[in-house]
Length: 485
Image (cartoon, rainbow, N blue to C red; front, side, top):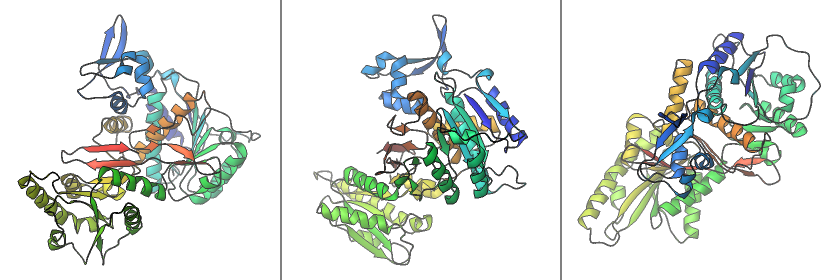
């Protein structure tokens, strides 16, 4: 695998990243090493109740890889079963396997050629020429740092050579157009990771439609170029798709529950499009949601008026996802839920005890401190494009590698850009290798990563769109339990 940072990247930054790539080992299998018959293996001991899928999530491997090296796993896993992964396939990366090319002088433009295979161009506003990089610049750098960790994780696997180059677009649409007109690597790249700026994204997509590059849009959530351009891949699940998947999960997980929609008449209520969609779907199923309107802060009396003496079940859905509105209702809902639970335990003889659940929004995954603690005490369930769980096995592995490589922690954001970069690298490189160097958005069908899940499908007659969604439960144990739809 070759990594090249284009001539527009500072020499110092290039050499620093090249040095990091040369001396750092792949961390993907941070496991004990055992020698068996003279050969070294990473060893994983299966825990009680673990499945092949669960282990694959922990180790960042596919189910096929686990079974390939451990055929006995095809029949299921048992407690204390040992899984072995050869060091020669999953071990540290030799310096000779990764190289970075420092090009300080711009080369004469070559003739633009059609897109070739096994190459990735990362075009983002790194702002390396700025004395004071912006927040956007720093986030893009974090993305690329995470991307390099993802590259390092996979570069010791078998497969054809994949060349990667990064370009600092300097937040300039003119710079993007200049690169598109003159840079032959971009012209033949299999995949281009495009910036958030709409004009730059549109220019890259337009050029790609002529050349056959795939453009991966990871940053511009609202852009819809994929509906008309067959080479654009929208990696962010569209809002209406999210609503449909989230409502389906709500109806399935809380079957028999009556939705209670909370609306602060003097609040933001920016999620009313979702609550309106839920209401329509419920009525089609013959269920009439309860709407509670309040002014300012929710009062206990407004919830206590709901009957709970005959085993009624309620799922509370607020009309806002903001922290301010959450604080105006969450404590009251929590206290009501506890009273309902206490009453249900006293009437244990009822066939169906009363229950209260809470269903909320992607915004809640950014909560920290008291608000996060309250989410767990509520056993709240949310839908989200991203799984921002720093306590997970893989997320901690990336975070540790990031700190080890770069000497600082990842920037906290939602989504976390370093983790997004890691997932993007793993998804694209695995795809290229699965298809003998040709990128195919439809195969493999799913990528379930550290923070992102990608399942691309055709968007009508256009390009491709992500159709996956996380349903996350903030369990009272302090864990996050995620399901990918």
